[in-house]
Length: 270
Length: 150
Image 1 (cartoon, rainbow over the protein chains, first blue to last red):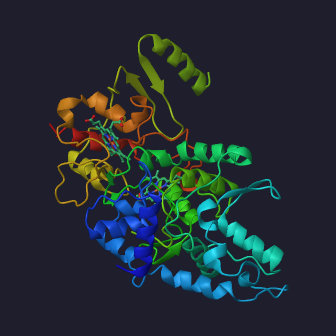
Image 2 (image 1 turned 45 degrees about the vertical axis):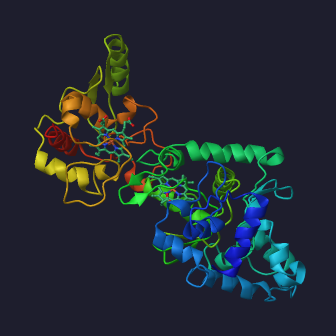
């Protein structure tokens, strides 16, 4: 068992998030990275043993290449202000710990929700006077993966009340709305049929606690919004843009569905 | 008289005798009687061999995405809907036709797509506008195949 996982296991045992059932070492390792909230299951628990194994071992988890990219960029000064993330935030292990569990968040200055990619880009444009990174660029994926990785094992906990409430309601409506020629809503696959096979794939609950995830099919790490676009397209619906209000609202609802699940970034999926 | 008014009038008459006339832009109209569509969509008898292919072809019916069926040479049968084996002993041809054409007419909350409907979608991709998943004759072929599953 690796040091980091051992520490996580201890954390969970003491906070009581993980009920230790003595099911054997393999499963205990798995659950440390895929903490199970009440009745809610991470995509990890539906993945094959091989895929789980890739995720469990940081040395073989290909998503760590993106964590490394983000780590390099963290202390790199860019833009007219001549600053790096590190200049303002210091040690990411401390300063970013909460960020990974709490986005998307309502932001007063924009009067709507903001997700973590957008927060990173706001820091670039406002505080660093640097250009925003493109969605799905190795830089934005790297930084998002690095930031969320600081919250690994901590339970997802997003605010859905107060000013976030109307956006949350829109996200929920999106999740339940049929779309495309196949006329299916997210809920048909991920609520009504989680655990059932759709042709060769086992449907999961469609949780996002592992994002950005390394998908074997993509051969790289991808964002939550890329996954939403994929699921929209497979029912032959027109997807929304990465970073669109529609997807950020949906993201809040989906994050809330997985409340309490441990952050797994970078998770590995098929 | 415009087509839609004709349909409207027909639907009002129909409602009282449990019969609905449905017409879509690019698809032929059909009548729902009780729990089925008794008349063939095309008038041409379906070909069971071709229909079997519609059932497993991922680009057409892809029924295996959700259903098991006695098609052993195809790997990976889904487990979302019931096994199609024996389906012809459970339903009449008319009932099966309705379930393929528009399963939402029998269960409004079903995940199963309407295979012969071309309107009423949200954010449809451009290339599918005005199209149904299956063509009328593919529906009839598929039905001929399903009717062999006694």
